[in-house]
Length: 436
Image 1 (cartoon, rainbow, N blue to C red):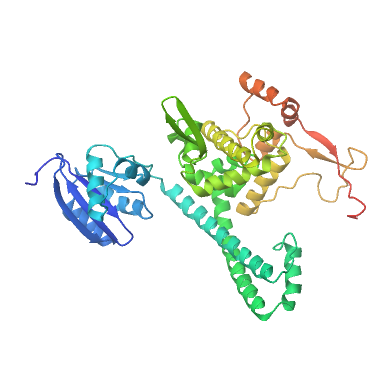
Image 2 (cartoon, one colour):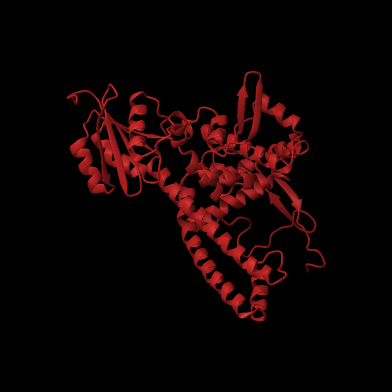
């Protein structure tokens, strides 16, 4: 007999076009199982007719789970979105149907065994959509470029090193008439698709740049070496609210950058990284770490030291994990990276500012005034890192703690760190005879 009072627990097996619901009471007795076509009107009707204000609802994380949760939340006491990987590990069954899945979710919710996932705020959801769309377009562009390479390779045509640069495109336009008719047809088709994708990417750059310029967290992360606005926004979209990670190790684990562990009794095995979490953010951090081989700061020293006893890929992934952990510290304490190179960092921030606002900041002497040479043959000024951060409106670097000073000394970066606090005059590089 169906109880007249007390909370009920509702499990929803959500698909793209339909939902299967199972209701159980506090004792675990199945009260009702039903199905409905997934539309907003049907979902509202189901919530008004079948659910109570004291009910609790559980569903697994899917593409449309947040829209379903937003519709149901005003009608019930709580809506729990669970991690499907953890749910599968807790409850496995030989028989898998929609009704069984909905019943399992309801029972796990009743027993408080569900691992709930964080509900992203609307700004984070929009950022995830934009960064995900850009990542998908870049993947499609890469596939089209590979198809063009494949057509040329099938005809034993030797291509330049950069086929899709300016000189490579000029070479391709000259070589295209010499190819057979089918090759011309295939390449011309891919070139039209590439032009359309490039246009769509240009349309996405402006809103992404505007969001990045308005969000101070993006500009903080851009001070990390190898991290531009695209990488910073992808990481922020994946992490969301940084306060939900108590430690930097948890933030790195959320991105799947920590090694897997198999431990039993006195034996413990550490294997490859878990690769859990957002694939796009993890891939971008790994690409950013690829650029740190020649960095003179502590991150570059960490990469080179690790590469002496590990292979290149392991050193890159470990450096990407280090980047994720440093990003947690920067966001948690609201401070920029302490060891950034001033000139590249200013160039990255200036590029973002121009894309977002169109504002150009011109320095030097006024127009019509001849500059005075400070060094024979010309010179250029490398600003201090503190001045760069002040001009770009970023927080001031805090002084180094004693432990960090010892770490800098151990990395043999003391002179590099001291140079960051002072402006320097360096001779302007002269063009070589071949370049002239």
